Image 1 (cartoon, helix red, strand yellow):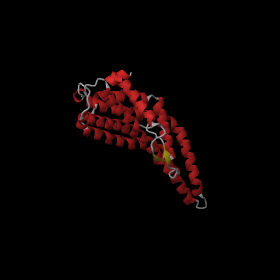
Image 2 (cartoon, helix red, strand yellow):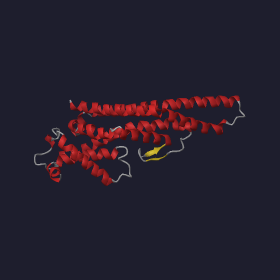
Image 3 (cartoon, one colour):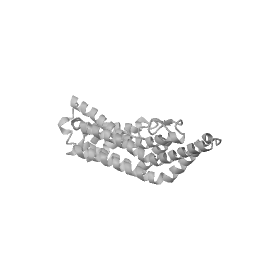
Length: 265
């Protein structure tokens, strides 16, 4: 094992740097509770598995036959870090759709003030955003999207994408990321729309009742009703929501594969 790593040290280092940069930005793996040594070990293990199965013709013009380091090689390392961060950032965009959906209706539920630190998204997030994020992470792991990310997506990126092609296709990369942000808000709105619409109707109904019968103290009873009905709606919609989460992951990874196919041409 060590002999093969030493013989392919320049290529192994390039692969390891991209894997490590992606792990540092991926949900769950980027948590502070995950030891840094474990992240380094996972990146090295992934690099060891990927190197023998990839054709590195894209890198041959920039790596000397003797494997000596050069300024071009340093630029390649910087580019590998950037590519790994971009892949991890794109996966973070997919997960942000679920936490954003929870933020959309948390205010109507009365949970807008219950923002606490979310270890998965590394930001302050309402409770419902954390709940959707956790459900999405469980679906992501259960349906083996992690294997698909480290397998086909990461392995395919080495055969099609390096820092040179990244610079040449920067306009396509920017368009791809902007389109992903647009889909983030669209997916979040679709997820939150049934709950938001129902809560809006309840708010209108309580407003009409408060005008019709001012002696009724709906202000003190409104929040418990909203919270209770919201949990009933979420429990009733959890199955179609999980199906939509799976479709969102499938759509996101298909977009990533099309991006890699674009640079393969």
